[in-house]
Image (cartoon, rainbow, N blue to C red; front, side):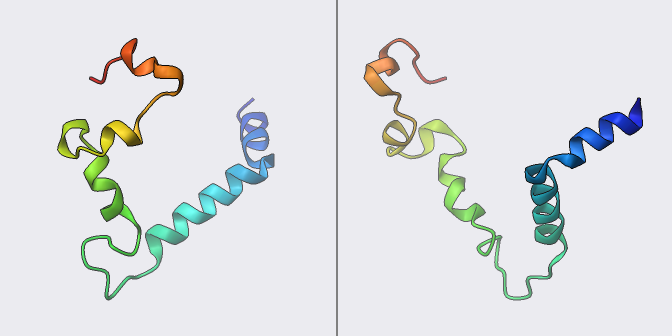
Length: 73
């Protein structure tokens, strides 16, 4: 049963591509990387907490004015 599960997971090309990308991203040395700037994580830091940036309302806006029905947490 375990063999069947592993076979199904690794038959997906997308799964294999994601695993290879994650492994390469974690293993490649970034000598001049200061604080994760090469990985793009510095761009997402301001969106980690909803109230930290005023642009979050625009970034997380739902279509058809659904923000009124589902307020941010």
